Each structure stands twice: as structure tokens, then as C-alpha cells.
Length: 388
Image 1 (spheres, one colour):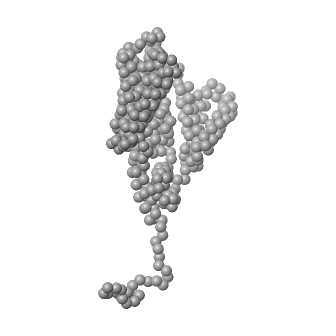
Image 2 (cartoon, helix red, strand yellow):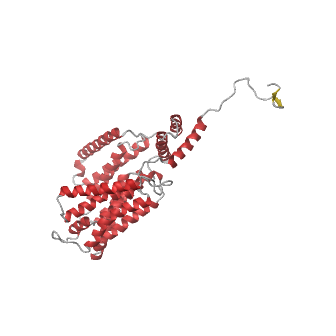
Image 3 (cartoon, rainbow, N blue to C red):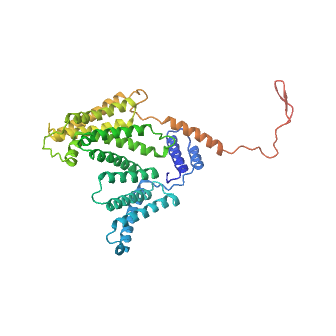
């Protein structure tokens, strides 16, 4: 399913772990070089600055090519711009597959630009070609299918985020199409669906069979934690209700069951932090700390208790205080969880064993000098006697 060669992806992971082991002084430079030689990675992956430059250059080339392509066939298409956009999106996708297969680009900026460009063109053309009265559920379903395919094919984190959001949008529009009951239950449905996807991502086998999608798994966890909170955040629910359900709430007027959403708004970030410490989960912990700002912003939007400068100062002091308490609490490791940086021992042990195997494989066996043959000696008593 992956467009990239899996053997090279495995070797790239091994290179990264060997670099980490070398930095931790668990292997020597010679052992690291032997690993690199024994497990080559022919991918073209430049540094971040060249990657950004190639990305921008590729975007410019795609845009100019699309403009030139449109001018060449403007007399033929006239009002069929949707077909032209879809066709050029397919050409861009073909160029992406070619660059990966023939020129071995991997996260070089070129493949990123071609991927995002082709998906954007295809989705734009498809959505423009659909009738104006097409339900939003259909749009969401199409976006989900296209982005899910792109995420599976290229293990792209941005496509993974888009696929998760599109799936949740499908559930949202399906719920509101069910009438009043569905509209009332939509926020809770989205929260349950988000945490269901999060639980699936946590249990999925990202270490062996799906090892090349591990970054996608991490970004799915972060995305669903955020969507799970935002789906029941009071500010989001109130403003979304005004936008989608035409409640026309007056300033200061609350939505039905406002107390429930206020509870979720305040307690969920705190629950993330507590669960992160308890389960030794850094993603939960950091997401909870970030969402503390969501509590402050939501409360500030509807309750003006003090000048903005004072509220921001108090909010910052609260976040600093929480961070300080956690750092002090975890300064001494508690249940294998600490605030201090630790070595990734299980990976280092793995690399050290791997390097020994490579070292043994590539170290030439000593051979005796010509004319030097063992055998024929004798020995006895307390020391060797006889002759060679």
C-alpha cells in the first residue's frame, strides 16, 4: 500500500536509532558507519531548508503549469473547468508517483507539494462538479475517502488529520439530518466518536505491522484529543449552535444544558493532565496543559471578571504553577515517569546488538601468514615440550 519502499523505510528508522545510540555513546562511530553501509537508504531526503525551498519551487511549478495548461485548452473546456481541475490533479498525482518511484524522493519537499497539490486539485474539482444542492454529508464523505487513501498511501500526517476531521464531519452532518434529537446529541456524539478513535489509535499496532505509520498514529491521538474537547467546549457549542441551528441567541443567553458543557470545558483539560501523569502519557499531559488556555479563553468570552491584562497574567501564573508542581513531583521518578530527560534504553540496546552483528559480519577473519601451519607439537608435564 505504501508508495515508498518499505525496506528503505526500515533502514531509515535504523539509521535514526543508530544516530541516537551514537549520541548516547552506546556505539562507536565505526559501528555506526558499518550500520549505514550494511543498511543503505537510497532516498533523497535533504535538510529542512532545502526541503522548504523545493516545496515552494514545486508549488510555483504546479501553479504555472496549471495556468499554461488552462490557456492551451481554454477554447475546448470553456465552462468545464471542473473537469480540467480534476484532470490536472490526476496528472499531478502521476508526477508524484513518478518522483517517488524513479527519483526516490522521500520527504524532500517535492513529494509533499505534489501530494498536497494533487489532493487539493482533485477535491476542488470534484466538489465543484457536484450539484449545488448536494448534502454536506456527501462532501465530507468524499473528502474522507480521498484523504484516507492519501494517508495510507503516503503515511502523511496532514492527510491523517484531514481524514479524522472529515470522518467526524460525516458523523456531525448525519446527526443533524436526524432532526431535533440528532442536533441535541451532536456534540456528545462527536465527543464519543473522538475518544473512540483515540482508543483505537492507542491500541493499534504501530510498532510492528504499521510501524511506518507511527507518526500518523501520534497525530491522530492529538487530533482526537483536541476534537473531543472542542466538541463539548461551551464556546464552540454555543457559536456552532447559532451558526448551524439558527438559535439566534441574544448576548448573555445560554444554550440548553449549558451547565453540562461548562463542566466539560473545565474538567476535560484537568482530566487530560491527571491521566497523563497517571498513565505516563506525554501526549495527554501536553495536550491538557495547552487546553488550559481553552478554559481561560472560554471563561473570558462570557465572564469579564477583570481587565484582560490581569486575566492573562493570572492564567499564565496558573499554568506556570501547574508545570512547577508537576516538575517538582516528577523530579524523582514515580512509577517509571519523570520530568527529566532519559535515554531510550530499549532502542539503544536493540541498536547495540544490531551493531555487534554488523561488526561481526564485516570484520575480516584473520588468516595466518603463508607457510605457517599448526600441528605436530607435543606437550607434557608442567610445560610444553617437543617442537613445532
